[in-house]
Image 1 (cartoon, rainbow, N blue to C red):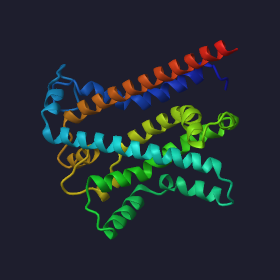
Image 2: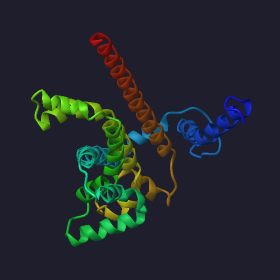
Image 3: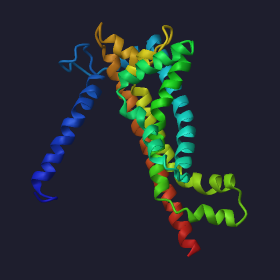
Image 4: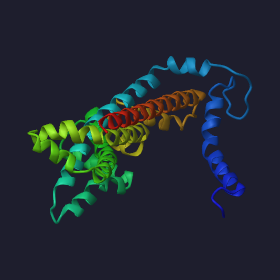
Length: 268
């Protein structure tokens, strides 16, 4: 089958249509007048109004945002330093260490949640925001570590060596040379980790306290009583925010490439 054939274009269009059809249905029915998600009876914003006046839902959303931001910050520091450290060591056990560093992604979530619950119980830690932060950091670190490690593989080590030859210390060379070059990988890994943290249900259920509720747990528990169109409105808002963040990141990356290209032109 030719790459640019009509059948290939039709097939790709069908795949994208099936992928994004559920998202489109959620967006459309978030503006539905009726509560029943079977027929569009008229345009209305009442579900958005009820969402913003739902104190429990807003509290759960705030908890999820705080947890995701904190876990991403901690994971960015640990993952970046871990990737840099792995790129600079030449031990025989380096391959095993790299495998262990991504092990949380390979372990089933229910197993990881049970292990974390038993571990926190042994440490006598009160279940709540602290245990959630530690648990989310555990599975967020590998996303950032893999992104940064892949970026370091394609980076010329002579750049940092030249900075050291000019009198910079190891920390100064890392701060001025290496970190700006790997920052796009850190940001992309952090965005992925943020999305995974906001989406997690299984692990959070095992390590969450009775007085704290995150947004995924709140939505999951509402399935027993029925999901209201407020959830559609919330999903639409979160989708819009996600697209806005990705757009800003894309524009920043494009601006950074243009500035680097202009700077290279001036030097030459």
